Image 1 (spheres, rainbow, N blue to C red):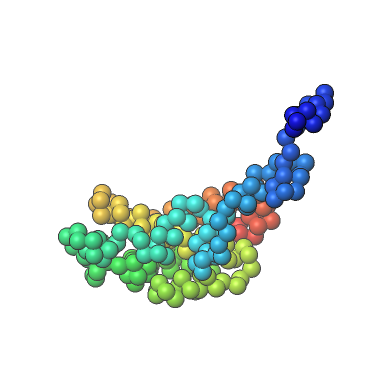
Image 2: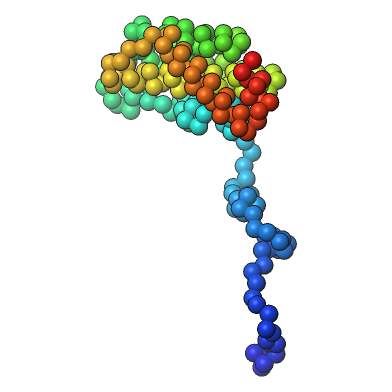
Length: 204
């Protein structure tokens, strides 16, 4: 009875794209993503850590550092690993996240140099500096430059610390600053393809 009530036509079958019950003419991957993702408010540190114009690996290490998840020596001691707690960059005091950024004389010299180039007034206290990064109200290009420099300092100091610890490799502050400068300049050059005006302002 039901089958006999269906009228067959010669027309071809078609797919109908109807997200949320509303027919649309085209398929949108972006719309699907928005529909299925878990919508949560941004975490407080979002503005200082995640940026589409930053360097992804710098974002990642910065996020771990903000959460204090990097295996600094104080962390390893808490895990029960027997290790000399002394900071390998200054050999003066115990290594912690807050010491590495930027109580350590080596780290502080490096961050001061990057801050000078970014025209930023740095703080030696981790919590103070992190709070300032979240609260920057400068023009867009100035804010991005400071964040690029800050995240580069975190990433390069961590890799420097690891190279010193595992490979006994030493690098001067000036050498590390040159590497940071090159990384930031390369990133700014990459922005040119997306936003020429922003790239020009960053290069001033």
